[in-house]
Every structure is written in structure tokens, then in C-alpha cells.
Length: 144
Image (tube, rainbow, N blue to C red; front, side, top):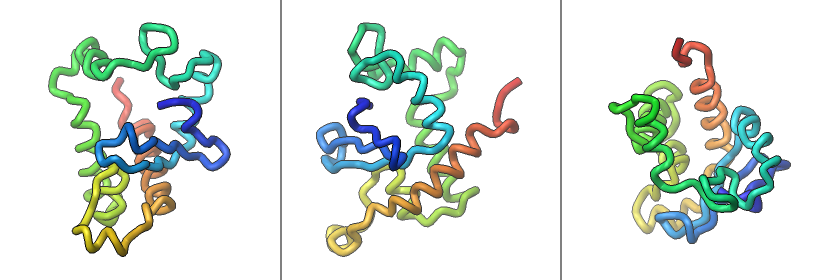
């Protein structure tokens, strides 16, 4: 994530197509909780929001896995976070399939369906992300 991709006024991160598996730009709505994490990082004055061990270089693709290992969370995987969100979106938030899948930047439907369904459902995803963010940050989900 690069600072130039963030629009704090519109509470939006736009990930460019060249960094997406689908080859398409992906817009991610930012929640209050996300902005609270991002704001203090501005002081680092790096091109990257989450700088790695080397100045002005991004975190490695192994950073999250190594963090989980150091925390002793052997049963948890990075991909599992995405899977957990997907299960929560359908089972707890009752989100429509399209909204949940688009939140994960998944392509949905056939080529014909996608030709007609051109919206990225940003505002519906914004609502879903706000619910998710509140769920994750809630006191009942914090460990003692």
C-alpha cells in the first residue's frame, strides 16, 4: 500500500491494477478503525504505508506469516483471515454474495453477467467493511 493510493477525504484506498491478481483496479473503503491505524504512520514519511525492515521498502510477503509464528499462532494462516471474513460476511452480516465476493476482489458471475453488472458496489461494501471493522475491534473479540 502506497500513500499516493489513499484518499482520506473519500475514505478510500485504490489498489492499482498492476498489483491485483485480477489485473483490475480495486477500491477499498476505509473505516474509522482503519484510519486510526493509518494516521500515525504518516509520520514515518515513507512511500509505503507499511514499511519493511529497510527504509522506503515495503513489508515482505512473509511479514504476516512471521508475525503469526512469533505470536505462537500456529493454527492461523494469513489466507485464513480472508476466509474468516467471508464466513462472517455470509453467516453473521448476511451480506449478499456479490458484496462479500467483491470485498475480497473476487470476480463474480459469468463474462456475460460481468458485462452488465459494472458497479463495484462500493457503498454496499463500505457498509459491510464498517460492520466488519467494528466486529474485529469489539471488546468481545479481544484476548485477555
